[in-house]
Length: 108
Length: 108
DNA sequence: TTGCTATTTGGTATTTTAGCCAAATAGCTG
DNA sequence: CAGCTATTTGGCTAAAATACCAAATAGCAA
Image (tube, rainbow over all chains, first blue to last red; front, top):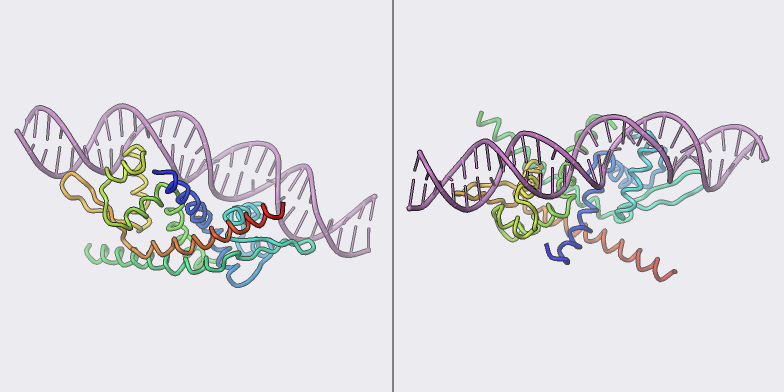
């Protein structure tokens, strides 16, 4: 892989990787409705708060979310709301998979 | 996380995860130009063919690519070309990151 | 200051991923 | 069939990701 392609793919992969975990994806989905503090997300996910905090750090490092401290709480919000558009296309992949599955079942 | 959200996020995350590796992303990019056999991708990536084969298996499991054997070779192609659209939005995230970086440097 | 709440960070155990080599498989071709 | 090529799979090791608990930090409030 040439250096340009390498750099480009590294950068893009970092974003996809950040989104490649159910808990993080759910947070992004929830943040699509508006900002949330860590404790709200923790409640929603049913994971240890330390785990949620680390997931949020991953999303932040990827540039997907940003945070803002207000009082005791830290509120996270989507940095680039367009991330939500990604879901539509992924849905396309999933539908295609579902059809393939149905076809396979139908064949059997 | 409720069961519906769980299932939805699991499914979506699987796709993002599959795209969350530079080598796999590069393959998808290349397959965007047309089908390629494993040996072509191997040459392009400079990895062991067994490694490339495993990466392709991951993409296939996620429903991003499909394969077709013809003679000795196995040709892979994008199953849902819309995946390429994802890159545009990811680019948006990256540009936002770049700007944040420049701003930070400017501030210093 | 002391205490209380929200969050992050250190430490650790477990699981998953990524890469290579070697061996197995599949499909030509002589 | 024997030999050759393309690909996948088994086995292994090193590195990264995930989750928890416990401890550190930050800020409000008594």
